[in-house]
Amino acid sequence: MPKKPLSAIELRQFEQGLKQMLRVVQGDLEVLAQETRQLPGDDVSAEDSGSEIVALEISFELLGQDERTAQQILDALSRIKGGTFGRCTACNDLVGKLRLRAMPHAAHCITCQRKHEAGEIE
Ligand SMILES: [Zn+2]
Image 1: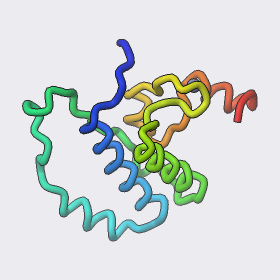
Image 2 (image 1 turned 120 degrees about the vertical axis):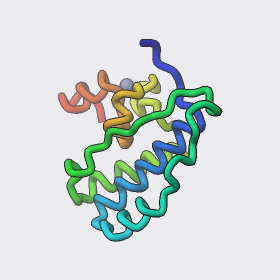
Image 3 (image 1 turned 90 degrees about the horizontal axis):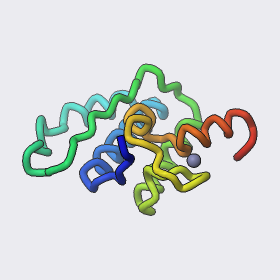
């Protein structure tokens, strides 16, 4: 499947998902529960967008409450503001939506992530 840049709707969904993740890692679970209740049932209708709706598959249970993850989420939110979200911070290639759906705070594409884990790049 060819990689496509993210649409505005997708970006908004990732932004919402990231903000929820931030609540989880910062331990604001009560706020998160309130916000989740306040979300309108279907504020984006599938037919008018003409674009695929992203179903985020974030595993909130897997998120630990640690500062490093919080910082990664904050970085991702600032990439959304800066217009570079969805691109690898190392090689500038598109990260890939499947990876972003599970890990919206991922800064690297899978190739660079492996190099990163191997200690070859920052
Ligand atoms: Zn990369």
